[in-house]
Amino acid sequence: MLSKNKSKFVISLQKKKVRDEENLFVIEGDKMVREFLIAGIRLKILLAKPEFIGTLNSELLRFADDVEEVSFEELRQISTLKTPHNALAVVEIKEKKIVYDDIFKELCCALEYVQDPGNLGTIIRAAAWFGIKNIVCSPDCVDIYNPRVIQASMGAILNVNVFYSDLDAFLFEARNQNIPIFGTLLDGDPIYENPLGSKGIILLGNESKGVSHTLLKYVSNKIMIPRYSDAKYGIDSLNVGMAASIVFSEFRRR
Image (cartoon, rainbow, N blue to C red; front, side):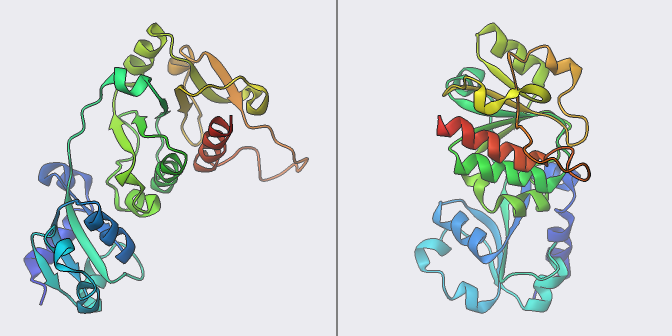
């Protein structure tokens, strides 16, 4: 039976302040928990229904420090989902140090003030799909370990490094090293007509405000996704997660 203290502890990790203090975050879902185990990521706590634990062999279970069988009702009480899955786990946050020179060698993404957890999760998932290994977020972006970000990313955080850094300093250094910076703007040139490359920085802005004037000065290539519809209402712009997927795809297509 799940203790009240452990239940309260897991629930408390829904708050960023507690995640930062404990250096832990929560993942949910059979598929995600299994993928973390297969990847050799150590789980501090694994709470799951008996039938899920029964599907794990000893090789996988050795990556879980504390394994406890729980009921559906117990999972429902600690889950952030309306309908919980069969497993939930607590994972240690691994500190990642940003090294500009390593990031500048490949195509990467920079995000300014992206607030919606679903958008960040979608962007991480798209980055993983298109082989973009690094995302640099401004400090005011939503926390990557927010439960809704984790859920939307569907385990893609196993394949993408997400850093939080001062984008002003990051882009300043990129410009000094002649790294192309592609800003996604409503008044940019159509991406399908723009000379793209295998490396550079794709800069995506806030959901409603776009790229700020503070960062606009660093943009070397202004790009946009052209609209082909003549509809007058309801589609003045694309969701930033959707836009990221289209932009990543076009870069890789080249």
